[in-house]
Length: 92
Image (cartoon, rainbow, N blue to C red; front, side, top):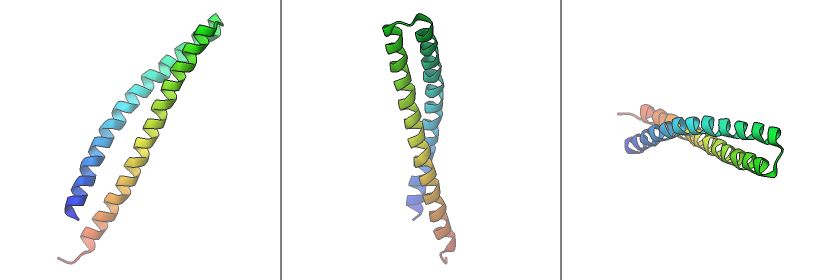
């Protein structure tokens, strides 16, 4: 059980680092998508509209990835809590 708890803690650490990277990338991609949207509105060309949709697709994909990482963190935190409860509840 202690080994599993250690594995969960290591995975949580990795996922939290990954979440930080995803946050940075999402901010960048969202800015790019917003800039592309404004360019598409101003220029009203098919190429600019295409660029906007592509940039938005990338931002949306990163948002989905970020959400998936958050979900996995939440699940692992629950698992960690359960393991800690079981570990502290068992007699020595």
